Length: 116
Length: 114
Image 1 (cartoon, each protein chain N blue to C red):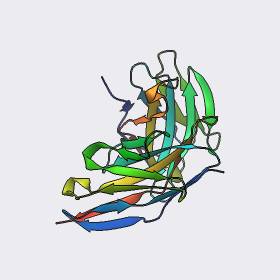
Image 2: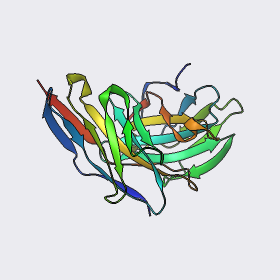
Image 3: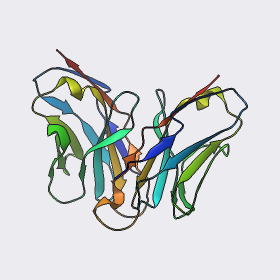
Image 4: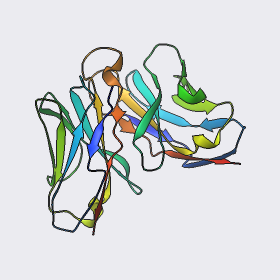
């Protein structure tokens, strides 16, 4: 069974640009969550999508947005990049429905964004 | 409000000695608790989970954790550290019902000395 796939793995942008990150969840998983990881703030929750609907949102500015497609793949977008957006962005999927694995997050390897 | 506190930001042990990584949680409801490990430049990998079944939970790579409701703790242990255990460990809490949010601890970086 393939794991959670995130692309790209590494990218470098400059301030003011925008970026789109992609996440393909485990087959059959309908929930996708996004997290930002930085040395100073640790792991912070961005948002969760389930069946193409945003189910939860963290405390991030509106520059951070996401969406989920009918095949459960998800994208997150950051517009008007700032230096502080440099981070490892992690995607996690889970089934989102009942059963043993419903609340177990499986993480991708992350997308490391550097903003210059 | 729910929270999770990892009591040590860094832990150093010698190879072959026991590992103890401490985690305390705060939750108004019976929680689901997890431990994840993150190796450098990698995503997080599930070590073990507690969901109100047995209080002593066994995970991968010889790790285990004990849920102690009276102490609101979920400490991670391993009898004998291996060099490959060097990584960052995260304690995570989630409500059994209601919110879908997961609250992550600040992490404990484990160093294993030869």
